[in-house]
Amino acid sequence: MRAGLGDTAGVRTGGRAVVIGSGFGGLAAAIRLCVKGYRVTVLERLDTPGGRAVVYEQDGFTFDAGPTIITAPFLLEELFELAGANFHDEVDLRPMSPFYRIRFHDGSHFDYWGDAERMRAEVARVSADDLAGYDNFMREAERCYELGYQELGTAPFETIPDLLRAVPSMLRMRAWESILTMARRHFKSHKLQQVFSFHPLLIGGNPTNVTCVYSLIASLERRFGVHSAMGGTGAIVSAMVRLLKRVGGELRLSAEVDRIVVESGRARGVTLKSGERIEADMVVSNADAAWTYQTALAGTERTVWTDRKVQKSNYSMGLFVWYFGTRRRYDALPHHMILMGPRYEGLLNDIFERKVLSEDFSLYLHRPTATDPSLAPNGCDTFYVLSPVPHLDANIDWSAMSEPYRLRIQKHLEDTLLPGLSASIVTSKVVAPPDFESRYLSFKGAAFGMEPRLLQSAWFRPHNRSEDVKGLYLVGAGTHPGAGIPGVLTSAKAFDSLVPVCV
Image (cartoon, rainbow, N blue to C red):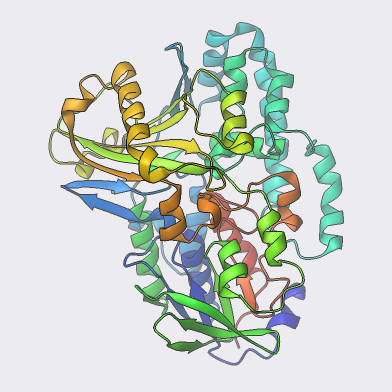
């Protein structure tokens, strides 16, 4: 509690907390606060909970809008256990086997398994010369998991001494090295270099820039598996909302925060767009970190996260997501697929550096009805396909480009994996970077907030306890440790370590 006492000293019995946003991080933080005795209200500007993990229902099809993969079920198990519940009584998680299939542009593929020997056999099938390299890569990934996640991931970074204590571990992990560089040290095969470096894209990072510490994702998956929830990821959000209410928390939908009220340098609550003011002893923002500092705190003196610093930071890519349902099933396709384009580094450079919309693309194809047919009408399939694209700093007129881009993706899928797709589509919805900006208040339409580069990670990222405003905390993708369901759940855990029991 050392770090938390000064900021929360004087919290009265039944202290009031307001949480802005009902994403995974916000709900997890709210549940943890309720367990500690706080009176908690979660404010969600949309009409459904979940943040980026909302659910779309259209024409009898159910689509998870955002995250689809659960790689750290222990974080959810721990959260529910804290509140006296059993996660698996609430949610039916199914393991994926293989985790996903990676299809290369030449039509070959790599099946990514949880079983170590099946993975070694798959590596050998693609490039027998790289088997020893795979073993070495996984040893390094294990070290990154132990040092980067277990040791550093759950601890809040607040002070320079916190940063200095992490330096020896960062050196042992070669944290200055990009994950693509790490993959190239171990694999001769260009295909395997892609397989073992693409993971940071799942949390908004460019593999050519993002620290190799994120190889820990490969270790995380091997240790705990890759899972999908029956009913979709939205079933987990619903279970968390039920748990929040069970422990005494309140969730208000269609309650849009206008600003955070700051008096004498301390957060004292929020005002809504409606004009209503809600008093609080602490405010926890699960909203986009850039929005929190630039908009919700507009006019508030800030010495660390100034508008200039927020705007000069590097941000993740945007996403173009096409949700569609078909009147037929494509039973040959697995639940999760990644379709690599003809270029790897060149495409990444177009997206993150040049910020242009390329003619080619790489895609993530999600077919949840492979596991849960209830997400579509009988005899039908539910899909979403996701393409990483530049964020809104790019000069792309999405109102004009959205449909042509969707048609290019549709043709590619029809030519490769989904024969007869054009004639089979019965429902369709598209979300592009401007929608992330307007719907989720994501700065620049960046889907994952700040890019997780080395100097935008840990201490360099917006802290879980605001450096600028007392009584203000941040959870979710924009703060430490970063994006993805494990990241945002861990951010709530790090936040929890800063807040004393309310007495």
